[in-house]
Length: 348
Image (cartoon, rainbow, N blue to C red):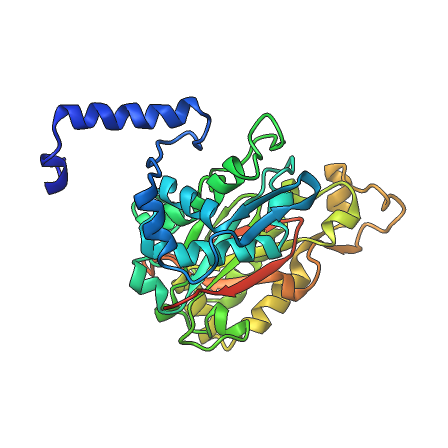
C-alpha cells in the first residue's frame, strides 16, 4: 500500500492528534464501532451550505421517545460518517424516506432490521455511487458513508443503541450501511424511480427495511421460470416465517436482480409487473411445511395443501436491477414491515 499524497504531508504529531480526536469520540460513545471524523464547525457549515433547508428543520423524529433530528444534527453525523459535503442532500432525502416508512421505530425491533437505501437517477454517476459489482460490499465511499450517516443519527440523536433501546437479538451487517444504486444502464426494465412516478432525469432515494440479505445463485439456466422459482423459494425460506400468521401477511421484500438474471427473464417476455405478481403468488409456504416447522399457530386445523401467502401484496415487493453482469447472482431481503418510500434529492 502506498501513501496518498495528502498523507505524505502529515507529520507524526499530526497523526497522534488525529488519533486522540478519534479516541475522544469512542470514549463518548458517539461511534458505530468504527472511527469517525471529528465534526468541527467548519466541516458542518460546508455540509449545511449544500441545502436550502433550515438548519433547525426536523427531518426525523420519534414522538413516543420525544426525540428528533434537525438538519444541523444530520450534518454533524454525516461529517462523522465520512461523507463529502456533496453527499448531504442525498443523506437528507434518505432521512425523509426513512422517516416516512417509520424506520426509527423499527430500529428497536428484536429482528434487527436495517434500512436499505436504493439510489436512482443522475446523482448515481455524479457522486460515484456503486451500482455494478460488490454493491453490498466495501470499496465505495458514497455507498459506505451515506447509509452510515443514517445509522449514526439513529445511534447519536435518537439514542437507539445496542443493549439499550436497540433490542436486536443478532442484528445484521447491513445496520452499518446498506446503500447502493440501481444499475439502470443494464436493466431491461424501467428504473425504480420511474416506476414510482418520477421522471427519468430526477434523482431519488428509496428506503425499505430488510432483516437480512440472502444470496440467490442460478448460473446454469436460460429459463426464466428457473430463476423466478429460485427467487420465490429464497423469499419463502422457513427462518423468515413468523409463528403468528398476521405478521407474515404484512411482509415486504427487496428483490435485487443481477443484470444477467434480469435480462434472461426479460428476454423471455416477462415485464417487471409480471415478475412481481409471480413472486407474490409463490412467496409463502403450504400448511404442511408450516406444520413441519412448528409454525402453524392459528392454522392447526387447515388442510396440508393450503398455501399461506407471506407477502402483503405484489406492490410490497420492490424489484430493482443492480450488481455486475459477470454471473447469475441475485439477492433478496425480507421484512415484516412492507412500507416503502421514494424521495427526490434536492438539487441546486
